Image (tube, each protein chain N blue to C red):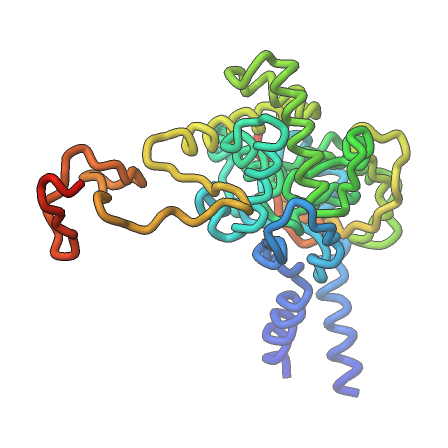
Length: 118
Length: 232
């Protein structure tokens, strides 16, 4: 009985948190930098894979652009349609994307922070 | 009765956090220093590909000496400034075999499949990834009329979004300038002999450096052979 009460209470406590999880597709659009850097570091340059861009539908890192809009099949799991620069044939690529805070995206476990105006 | 809840809830929330990627697991050198070697990136990257760490270019050459020397060999083979090739690889794939983005763009030069094929190179083979990248850079330099405009090279080599080109320009410019600054040594290539050991008549330059030429005659050493006048 006690365990049922605990589970029920947990469900009540956790479900709003899940419901309020931030939608990565509603993240701010523009440039993001890997969390090992600050936005100021972009002024003197960061590694190619440390810069991400999000335009509301797709994420670009390096020479890959992945359309994520409409490809979510679970909370953080996407079947993104990724196209390499210079290629016309997209590849379906599983990706884990979350929005750990209003100004951050986590892409396959790597956190990128939004850099307004960059 | 209610006291365990906050602890339990905290534990659940901590477990639910996405793990932070261990960037260093994607820092990977070649297994040998040979531009003819056909080792695949798949063989080298048993944990897959991902975001490497991007320290200074000098640190990368120490971390990945085989790849750095292969880049120098490829640069010499295709007539590209080795320092520029090293700076570009440092920016693109951190001189790591396992640097990669989502859709298979891989390796130290982040060669795309289409570009690799255009040069007859398989970007999944480490040495060909390097050669294909350096060939792309060679044509970029040719198209830009030299290396004075890094921005022009960014447009040719990167050819992606404006933010990426700007970032490429800033990072490659900074790394190239650092390699060109006084006192910066670069790898000499896989086939290079080690720097000669000190010998008679050689002594270090006063402010460091590798120069072994004497600017004035050294004094006699105990091991010198004395030849009498008239017997030479």
